[in-house]
Image (cartoon, rainbow, N blue to C red; front, side, top):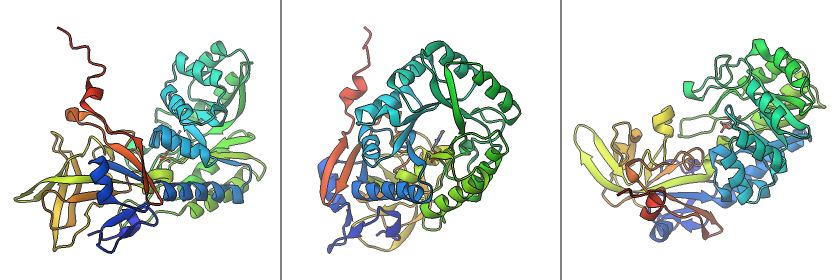
Length: 417
Ligand SMILES: *Cc1c(COP(=O)(O)O)cnc(C)c1O
């Protein structure tokens, strides 16, 4: 039984038999066809949410662009969907640029990031004709100057010195972070860029962190930018937090757009061009992960072990992110359990102290709000096979990424004699 259906993609329901339905598809039927663990994306809900995000900014500030931060879900089908819905893309590696291109996105809509861009990546970005290259350090300046044969539009990533209240590993906007130019050196780096004819400096970029639940911290970021030299373009980064469990309170997209655009108008002026780069808040709520319960161990604690874990969800191990799993499609007395994965680590826990419908071997267990950073950080620990991704819309399921096979695991192996 699912306690809070509002954590599932908009429009998710239970059918007459009490079975979970997402994107018009019965989840148990998806499992019968595609197996577990399975990433289920509600394509209709995702498109509606992305459109809402874009409209929220376009309505308040016509000279705005929403760029999806590719790293939150770097799969060609998702990146292509973002392009179809009129979003640009933030790419932070050559591979992300190529995946986005494979999905049908135009490099002219992309902004190229990275704190350690190689020559090869910069050459790719320049040749592909990305909209902006974001300069993160002086070596980027040297490289672009050396590699370009026509002026490249660039933004400069600066540290806004805003310590976002989020997990330490997700803070990026302080002076000691590895990203951007520390506040004391910004003027000097701007002067340096202006001496290079192959760099065309259009504006500034800042990104304070991820899973930020207090919109006032984005206002503080805009204020910090307004204390620097003024530019025609500002890329304000991503970072908007989302609701992972019933007790979370997260700002709506409208509240975020309201506060951010208001701050831009007050501090930077209504004439500037703005870009925002949401990742997590664009995709998180559109996906759930479906697992099969493999064992139930009742001892000092109740361990419910599923057929996935930190191989398909590293958010718990990396950031301590809480999730709210549920046993679906049947009802029974609740039992307080720890949901654990199948990997050889005690840290491979998906959720602790959660009330589940008294679990049994063979049950289907869902974890909602896994659309951000789960696919991208999925891995082969214990030679686990990475899950399939299925897009559901109006009762039709389409495979977006097939499940990995043992042959995939072996394909790079040279089997030395
Ligand atoms: C990760 C990242 C984002 C997206 O952050 P979310 O928290 O997923 O919204 C945007 N911009 C930059 C530069 C990033 O590194």
